[in-house]
Amino acid sequence: MGPTPTAPLLEDALHFVQTDKAVKPLDEQTGEGDPGFDCRAKAAILILDGQPSKPSLDSDGGISAAAAAALLAAGWKVYVVAFQLPVDTLPVAAAIASGGGTLEAVVVSDAGELKPAISAILDKIGAE
Image: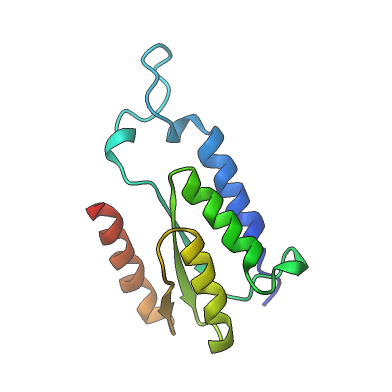
């Protein structure tokens, strides 16, 4: 496996939700935006399959957790799926989930557990 650029990915997600018209409230004047914006939960799902490594100073996940917190501050929760992570990396996944307002990462040990885990997260998001 190669590097896991977690913080840059979350920063890109923040840029997207701040700038893309498709995830903004409907502007009656221009017709741009999402007519259902106000009734939809705002959330991102991060599937983390390795220790955050880009930037190299993010080995403890602090920069990624701060990026998740920025998404939360913009109104978007960040759910984290810890996919086949070594046990010593789970606190990093938990820190990112906590920063994103979802308190804990969902730990998945194999591909067979991935679909049910994502389905459970989508059910939570749908219930918000």
